[in-house]
Amino acid sequence: MPAPIPHPSTTTYALRLRAKVYALIRQFFAERGVLEVETPILSAAGNTDPNIESFHTTFHGHVDAGARERWLRTSPEYPLKRLLAAGVGDCYELGRVFRNAEAGGRHNPEFTMLEWYRVGWDHRRLMEETVALVEAALAMVGRRCEVVVESYRQWFIDELLLDPVHAPIDALREPLAAFGIEPAGLTRDDWLDLLITHILQPAFPDDRITLIHDYPASQCALAKIRPGDPPMAERFELYLGRYELANGYHELNDAAEQRIRFERDNAVRRQREQREVPIDENLLAVLDRMPDCAGVALGVERLLMCLSGSDAIADVLAFPFSEA
Image (tube, rainbow, N blue to C red; front, side):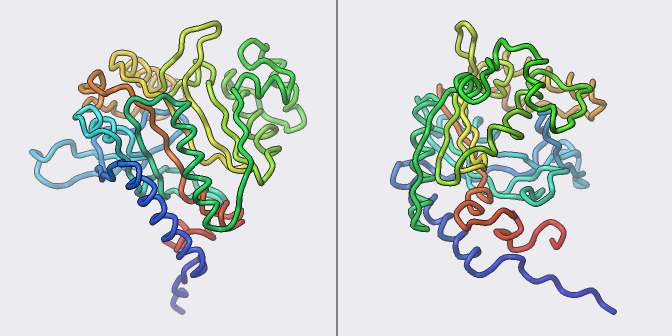
């Protein structure tokens, strides 16, 4: 007997809501003079982040076309930064990205990301624009939320009475004792992340936009580090209710430092017996020429889930991964 033909997992309402959000995003940036661009989905380089796994494929055409092994992008970040270095100015991309091994109730290996960059801005100014976009999306469905802004360090002190910068690891582990987490191989930053995902983030009220800014320097990713005692990564995350929607940076534009971070990522991959990922040499070749800027990536499916009141990503996809 033939297998049944998969039907769309989502309702007509969800499909129309997605279309309205796309139109809102394009109008929002058109009014602000931010250029929509399109960059490659396949690249000769991948994402070195040890916590993200990329899909890759093989090109079988003529050898003169370039590297045979190609990686599906996990975000459009690297080519967008190359455009910034070429002088394109404020720009954004709305498109599909891919992350291997991320499938479940709230994750799909193929999803839509909105990423944009503002020349001459820092992360604090970009936080305000990110809130404005989310508030505009909420207004489409007749919702308003209060906005709370707090530093990463003060957040931990207020809610857990723990200083995330100086507290010993045993103190960070203590509030998580009831969860039965296997501690082998976990670093300080791992325990901080677990405190967020298991205790702090679930406590956010549904009717609130929460912005957390200025992260420990060890969690800098691609952000600039501000000197001080302690030094802090100029980074922010935006939560709508319990959902993390956006991750933004005052962007690093130092190629030598960025190479060190990429190589450090691959060293962690070796330690974890993960495959090393090719470093994006095209990005490093121009990164020193990238203007001072801030950038942010926002997960569109997460936003749609919040707007539609769903806790399942399948509800906002035409077809989930299992039916694609």
